[in-house]
Image (tube, rainbow over all chains, first blue to last red; front, side):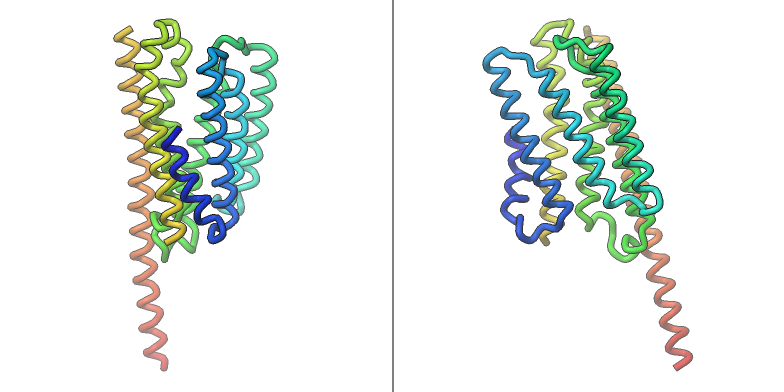
Amino acid sequence: MASSVFPLTIGLRHWKTLDKPLRYFTLFLLLTVLQIGLEYYLGRIKASTHLLSDYYRSIEVTFLLLLFRQFILPQIKNRIVFSFLAFYFCLWLVVSQYFYTPDHLNIPMAVTARILLVSCAMIVLYSLVHKTSAFLIPIYKQYIFWIAIGVLTYCTGTFMVLSLGNEILKYGADYFIAMWHINWTFFILSNMFFSWSFIVATK
Amino acid sequence: MSQLSIIIIVGSIITVTITVGYVLLALKSNRTIGKLTEQNIAEINSINSAYK
């Protein structure tokens, strides 16, 4: 949780100088911190956090896809982002109606969200390389590059542990916590990239 | 149980390696395009100055 507070603090500190997409991203980080805090509280009172994670995931996908939309090549941005969002929410309705059990992690939606975010982050990198403005400004000097890298790192690094989450749970809480260290490691790493994106933007 | 751990760790390493490869490719492409653009600008400038 502390790692996600770090980029949020930088974002809030430089709020006045940030452009619109970065302010939007700061709001997303604020929601992330609130979600983690609430999950921590629910965990302390031994309540299930699966439903909260499921709702937060939808917010995460919506926020990040709409953020990435502003950096994708103009001729494809609406088609890609809105078809991804429509696909995600249609699948979410179907899965939550027919396949979701509250005592399990919602693996189909978690995996779908990761695949969509990774695809969109890769399209953003492709767009950055092919945009005329990127010819003269190296892409690593643009903040969206570091946000995309943070998303890519987190989503690909935790893909396996997340997709086998229910299998891991079968072996007990100790094994789950041991394996969940992979998730925490990549979460901290992605927050480092997010912090760097703010530093790049405010330089 | 250990088999599951191996699958998760190896799978994670593979997915992260693919991502790192993609990012490095993007950086390399950006650098190449940047160099070509700089060359083109230099050529255009030399042609312009020759006309003057």
